[in-house]
Image: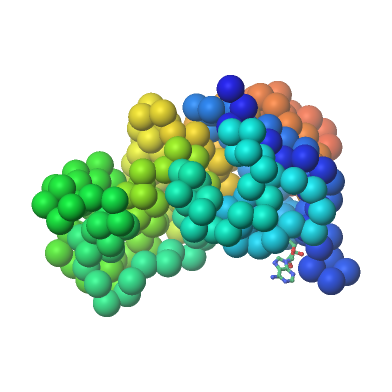
Length: 238
Ligand code: ATP
């Protein structure tokens, strides 16, 4: 089943066309990778799907419903949640409190408390649960970012660069965490520059370049296309 459908979508900022005439579908249960050079339009695509930015022209459908003009919180109620490239935690609250807050929107206090501990464990944050979020290193903050999103019980999770700045072992942990979310039935759009992460996780990859869709398909095939190598990967990748 098609979960998300984007039709003829364009987003301009004044004279800058951040996205030009994008058409794409994401099927339920897929992990789709979104890659491309800096400024290609990846975060802007996350912003327009989640409602943080308005489209200039075109439409966004979720489960067949036109959500193009729907505000962020209503999309969140449909199960669409995102993480941010720069973690957006409550700095002076603990890890536990950061995870608890979204849980309290849909659970009573006791259930939310138990669930916060379960999520912390799943996201490898059990040892940090009582620490102030701001005391965490960047790798743990990236995990907290996913934990907060997970606490909203999303059906469709958009993850913006989850492993930037992480060591290799932490990166592997995040890969396993994201794979686990998909195994729970979540559909995921993953923006990531590190190809090892993309190739090991995604069913399909979409390559953006200067706001246009350059290629879309199986990651192994797409990564060997000359135009993708020229625009993004570089010859050293091959
Ligand atoms: P990166 O990999 O560096 O995060 P990206 O692929 O996510 O890049 P975007 O951040 O979506 O790219 O930016 C796409 C283009 O739109 C860039 O030229 C950027 O400068 C421009 N842009 C994005 N947001 C705005 C904004 N709010 N106002 C003006 N221009 C913007």
